[in-house]
Image (cartoon, protein in one colour):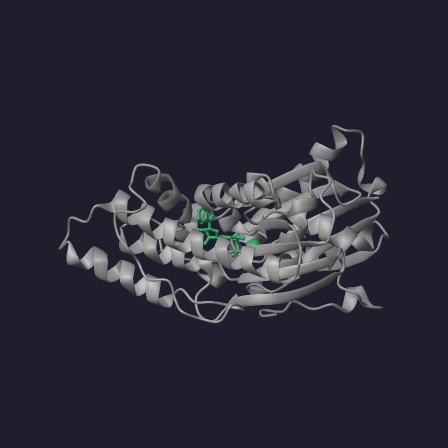
Amino acid sequence: MLIFGIESSCDETAAAVVKDGREVVANVVASQIKTHAKYGGVIPEVAAREHLSAINAVIDETFEQAAALNISPDDIDAFSSTTGPGLVGCLLVGLNAAKALSLVYNKPYIGVNHLQGHVCANFLESDLTPPFICLLVSGGHTQVIKVDNYDKQEIIASTIDDAAGEVFDKAARVMGLSYPGGVKLDKLSKEGNPFAFSLPKAKVKENEFSFSGLKTAVLRLVQSFEGNPPVNDICASFQETITSDLINKTRNLACKYGIKKIVLSGGVAANSALRKKLFELEKSGFKTFAPKMQFCTDNAAMIASCAYFNPIKTKEPLLLEAFSKG
Ligand code: KG4
Ligand code: ZN
């Protein structure tokens, strides 16, 4: 089964074709990062307009990549898109494009939840099967999800304040790194000492994360150097603190629920220290897995995979609307 997916929930306009939920046939991502870097974050109205101007070219290029493999638009079995959570003006662009394609080619439309899409990034070009525990860490969410089956999932922990990606970006910002700072912070950490500074870990319940104290501690630490902070050491210490907290809690929950397979998802799953700590769990008997780097941050291949494995169930998919939170 060939599914065409579109993702436009935030600052990436993306389209892809995926076969049977796992094999990526075509994959195109147009990033708006350069536009938003000027403002230090995503401006929703600007993002929606950028999606509008990019969407047709992204769809055309995706069809071109598929055509190179002798797949024509008529061979597509269904068209899908993210319906939420995300920025509604942005979501509407991808949602209406996918619905229009489904009407033009007379094939079903399938709506997809963005977060479940991130979980499904793990199925792309892999043979991973549930059950597993998934640590989902993105710019807007931090959750531990118990994935019992492809379409049976339960959130077993989440953040009570900031999301992990958000904290990476805010910590990067106080150190003068441009938006989105997570990936730059990751790079500078490689040149720093992860144990140079001791930063606080929140004392919260086993099913909660909290990063606002850590965020404030990084700000205070940077200010204490009065204009000349040891950026690499602060980056490395921050990264060590947050990634060990994320992995330790996830491992403890996996033990609690008796599940020996742990996977990552979301943009922060691209973080080198987080991936390293996850893979180290293999030594204590866990099976671990993380999506390929290009499938960690927002992309449409994960949406097409999710349309196959875990679509939004409704009798009237063409009536699905965009939603901001969920
Ligand atoms: O999943 P995603 O692309 O968008 C959302 O759905 O939010 O995640 C974006 C987040 C941003 O906060 C970005 O800074 C973070 O993922 N990120 C990273 C890395 N690459 C992306 N954070 C830490 N280390 C990275 N290597
Ligand atoms: Zn995302």
